[in-house]
Length: 380
Image (cartoon, rainbow, N blue to C red):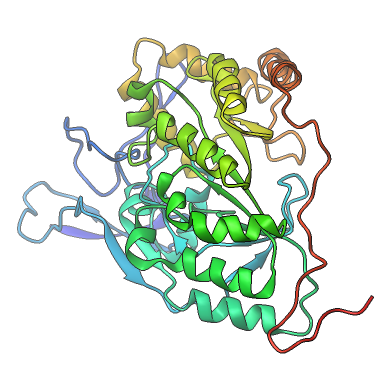
């Protein structure tokens, strides 16, 4: 049989002898199989739901619906598409996301927590239930036509990757970029998908007007690590190719090293920055791993399943980087960390920026060219 339990009965958490959290899946019996091609291995409890459906007896075979491992595209009629970013330490004013949920399945992704607002789990649901905002282009045009809009750069992929696999099918990002070109609206894009090259023609035209910059997220050149940490993303080699091709096309391109995870990939910072620079990257950024909300549970489960030989070490190093915790919500510190471990990562970043000529120039996108269709130009 199955039933509905109150929210307080969702996760049963126990402390192991090593003082680590052990998680039990509230919706499925524990199984020994590993969900290949997925980062999360279970669904965390949604903290916003008052009730949840749980399996109470193994005999409930006929009535229990096993999770569908395939990706599902769910059409969403959004009310808005551009969101103001209030966080003072993320380097963006407004963000736009044509998709909610992300098939890339990066286990560390901070966007997982926001998926709970839609009534889903931050776990496997986030990777296989992709909400597609099919009316995004129309909403975006309406937003830019509003006389109250005072042009500032808008960030694509402020939450989920705008070039995730769904874009190949729905092409919402491309349609929005076409609108940006029409209005001369500057944008910044962050992605880890080579699919962005499909829009090189538009990006090249925008770059000629100083209306676009692109950050390629690269976390590791170790393919074994990438396949389990970012299971449905393109290889690092392909991401370097994207940097090279976009740079050759005149698009200002950079590299995002995020997150840096001590004991897993922080030692690759030098090689990533070197390769990116040699292939045309002109700026860089990084973040230190933080595990807030449901991501703490998901990452812990993933870490001990994939790297049992070093899981204790990695977990403790992350704690050392956040004053004994794995998350810090303080502005300015939450994505940089503190303490010796985080400081070593920061010093590496500064050193290799200087060595490879990254972040040397002062540069910004041009907002002065913005115009609405029908306008003769802007008077100053």
